[in-house]
Every structure is written in C-alpha cells, then in structure tokens.
Image (cartoon, rainbow, N blue to C red; front, side):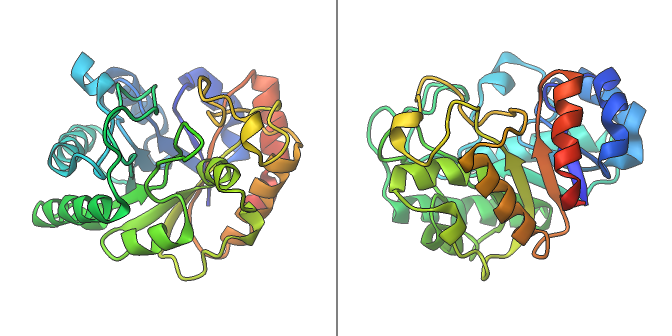
Length: 278
C-alpha cells in the first residue's frame, strides 16, 4: 500500500494526484484543516502522524520526544488520538517521533542544548512511554519513528540497528529512510548495508534529501536547513539508495508513506517514478 502524507498539501492538490497512490496519511496540521481532509477523503486515510490535530500554540511548539519526556509525550498522544477519533473513526496506525537524546527549543530546531542523555536512559524513557500507552490501551495503535540529529554526533534515538532493535522490545517501529540516510552520513555508514531483517516494522516513511546533497558525507549536510523535509524525488546518489532500500522494505511492511511536496508537476513526476512501490 503506497500512501502520501497530507502534510503541506491542500485538498485541491491531493485531488490532482489521488490516482497515483492507494491512500493518504493524515499528517501534522491544524485540526480544522485535517477535518476538511477527512471529510473529503474519508476511508482513503489509513494512518496518522505526529501532531494531526493541533489547536494551540502549545500544540504547535510541542516536540514529540518520548526519549526525554515520556509522560508528556504519552499525554499528547492520547490528546491527539481523542481529537482525531472525533472526525476519523477508522485508521490503522499512529506514527510518533521517537525524539532526540536531549532537550531542544522546538520542533524546528534539532540542536540539543544541555546534557545529552545516554542511550540507556532514552530506552528507559521509551519503555515508560510505552507502559503509559499500554495502560491507556493505545500501545497497539502506535509506532515509534526514528529521527535524525543536527550535529556531527547525530544524537538521535533510533539512529542505528542496535538502538532500533532495543526500542522494538518496547514499541513497534516506523522507519523513516530519509532520517536514516542522514544518520548514516554522520556515522560514515552506507544505508544499503543496514540490516533491518529482525525489526518489527509497522510502516516505512519515504522522504528524500534535497538535490544539493549528493553523497552520504557530513559536509553536504547543513544543520540550519531541513535537508530531508518533504522534497521531490531527484536522482541523486543518496536518493537512489533510499529508493532501493524502500523497494526491499516493500516485502516487510504493508504501508509505505511518501512525504513529498513541490509543484503539482514535480509531485506527479516523482510519483510516476515511485509507482514501483505500489
């Protein structure tokens, strides 16, 4: 099943490319806008992601970071699920950010300030996060997404195979290949050499790096820009490898969701090249 994220799209834009995908993921956005999305596409929305029903400035500035803040993150998950359930009764999975190994200013600044938590501390916090969700009967609905860091150490949680397998003992995984590509660059490893065979995958996110980033080396990564964020597919070395890994993942998970923006022509061109994933 090939989905596209509704994040950063209008209903009119999604109508133009509806035939290129099997359905939609309700992405981050204001509740009012996402209600309209659900009224239009209804049963074609299969998954939701991160903060799909924001209302307040607090919601907008909240960084889903259970690796550091498990209690508040679990509370936000419950809030978002309750809001979405009021206008989207049927969905398969809610993917939330796994977070970083420290505190940051907000969701658009991934530079950690202050103490960086150890992996062991982060895993304990994710275990606590999962326990809270289980008590609220939400754990089976949620998958945790790996995320990228913003400096040469890439202090993200879920940035390598070992960490992902440790996290998977507590909660199932949403694997973002664009995030993983960035972390591979920082760690001087090749995305194609990663082994995800033992990972319980619930969903794969397919995000591409901007065209200027041609290889897996830190010098191409500008920490002041969202270098993976919802770009059209361009045939750079790094993006071709992301697509190759996605093809392998097709056998491992029911859901592949593309995070993609651009002009209508760019989006259609990208989706034409991604039909091999359907």
